[in-house]
Structure formats: structure tokens, C-alpha cells
Length: 479
Image (cartoon, rainbow, N blue to C red):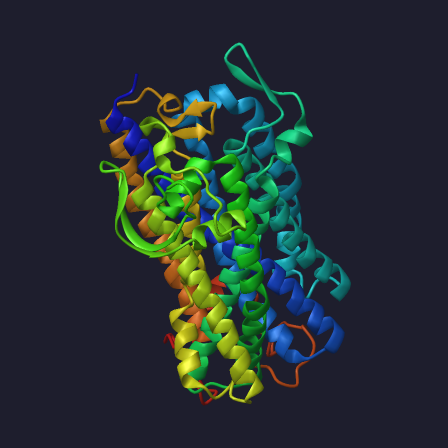
């Protein structure tokens, strides 16, 4: 049996690599759909601003897509290296689901990505738009298969256990397991929100620096519209997801709420803040709103649900971590709703493109969507512990028989390589966004070539020149 150190280090390693990986696919999911909208708007209106924004955000998409593919491959290998017992036990289900993702989504993306990135001057507008839509659909299909696999680990259905292995007996039940619809909707909406915040922060950044051309104003306005409508929808999806969690993973829900025990005849309060204490089995320094927890989760002021004390100690997740990661996610979600409403108010007053405090808030909120995704991912995955497959296999039984030293060494290598490679990629993407879209007013065609004003579509050519607020270009500088 592997030591506790090896188990803990393997969990840290997987958590570290997946934290990097989840960021980039979230950006590509949102940006791919945004690019499809931009190209559709350009084809319908022939307004140059939409084409300029398309070519600008294409460069960021290309960088994020490349880093997402690389980080995903590395993460997938860990199922065989660090979690071989899990692969042996559940590979009959998780293996095919990941294979379906490659066959349907990755091949679709790979088949049309080249046309999307480099085919603007080589194929007709209709075929190029089809390529953009295909890539966008591919990212959503990829999310569907990945979330199906992950959701099955939380709410397993459609299986039998034969000879110590999980065998699928109903693939529809496996894929459309009870938590799958909520997780898929929650994750895809989170990707759209994160992208809207990044686009909005980029527009606000350039507005603060005195650049107020049509491209900057358009992406800023589009992002705020997206935020206004999507953030409240995400709150409703999160509420339904919470009710599903209460039904199928009540221990996780109790940890998220910091709820330990019910008092006869009393509703459950909503604990806003506090410090869950696993040893003393209580939430210290709790700031509560009486009965609101019951109202939210049972739709009744007197309704009750299981507290952590009703579960064996060995079956309880780490309440301190889950309690606070959940509040980080919810708190950022409320700020997103607030930013959307403030932008709508500014739009109504005719100040959307003149309100510097609103721009500053949008810049500060730029990374909030990605932070909320990470916080939500930590909540759902740490909240599943001590199970790797809820109710079927414990995490301690899934790890490979490695020594702590071997896992620790690979973890150290991952840390160095990831921060070097993905840090450089992130800095480069930020440089592209800091430069801003190029302006080609009056040029309504995508034609390129020698002597033409179109900038190449190659991502690595995007950050060499920088356009200043007065329209001049300074070679080799970063705005």
C-alpha cells in the first residue's frame, strides 16, 4: 500500500496540473463562440470593426488553444502513472468517454482549426465561417464528454462491478448521469462569463489609456451585454446544481454550508462567514442569517438537511477548504452580477464609454471568471473526498504504488516546467491583449498579401508592433 505522503503528493500534482489545464479550455470555449459571433456579425453587416476584432481575438485564442492541448495531454498521462488503480477499476467507463472526446471533438477542432486561423484569404467567406463554427462546436462537444466522465465519478449510474472492475451496462445512464446536465451547463456558462470578463477588461484597459476607437468600444460593449445576461443565468444554474448536490452528495453540501447538526424544530441558518473546525465539529466565529439556509436548499423556512455529524468522520470532506472555496466562487459571481448591472445603468445614462470608475472595476474583474472557475473546481473535487468515485472507490485505493520521493520529484519538475512554459504563454497572450486590435477603417475585405494593409493571422506575429493611443506604431514596444 502506498504511503500517505505519496497519496497526498499525487493529489497535489493532479490538482496542480488540472488547475493550469482548466483555465485554457475555458478561455477557448468562450473565445471560439465569441469568434463565431464576430464573424457572423461581419458577414451580415460588413462592418470592418467586427473583422478587426475577429483577427485580434483569434491570436489570443490560438495561444490559449495550444496551451490547453499541451496541458491536457500531460494531465491525461497521470491516470496511468499516478492513478493506475483507478484506471484498472474504472477504465472501462472513463477510457471510452475520453476516446469519444478525441474522436468527435478533437478531430473536429483539428480538422477546421487550420482553415479558421490561416484560411481567411484562401477560402470563401461561407466556408471560413463554417470552420469557425465547427471549432466552436468542437470545444462544446469536448466539454460535454469531459464533463460526462467527471460527472459520472460524482454520481455513477449505468454500471455493474464484475471481477473487481466497473463495467458499463447502460451508456445513456453513464453519460446522462444525475449531475451531468447541471455540471455541463455550469461549466460552459462559467467559460462564457470568464471570456466576457477578459474581453471587457481588455476593452476597459484601452479606454483607460485614452484609446476609444470603434474596435475598443465595440468589444467593451459586447462584453458588458454578455455579462449582464449571463451572470444571473449562472446564479440560477448554480442554485439548481446545489439542489442536485444536496440530493446525491449531501456530505459535500453540508461542508459547503459549514453545517454540522440540526436543532429540533429550527430551520438551518445560512452561514455567511466562519471557520469550520473538523476536530471540534463546529463552525467557529460564524456569521449567520437565521433560516435562510433552509429557504435556499429546501424552499421552506423550517426545512432541514443532513449535517456533517450525520456522516462518519472518514467520509467527510475537508469542510474548511470546501466552505471557503465555495464562498470565493459565489462572492465573485455576485460581483459579476453587480458589474453587469452597473454597466447597464451606465449604458442607460449614456456613460458606458465615459465612466472611468466602471472601467477600473472591469479591469480588476478581468481574472475573476478564471478564479471563480478554479474555486468552483476545488469545491466540487475536494468536496467529493474521500471518494474518487463517489460511493464506489476511495481516493486512497486509487493511487499507484509509488514512493513519496518519486511523486515529489515529478511534482517539482511539473512546477518548474509549467510556470516556465505556461507562464511565458500567458505573458505573451497578455502582451497581445495589451497591444489591442489593429485598425483598418475603410478596408472591408480580408484580402492580404504584399502591399496590403492586413496584418498576418499568425499568432506569433501579433506582439511585435504596438499601436499607441494616437494611432502610431512603435516597433518592439509593449503598450
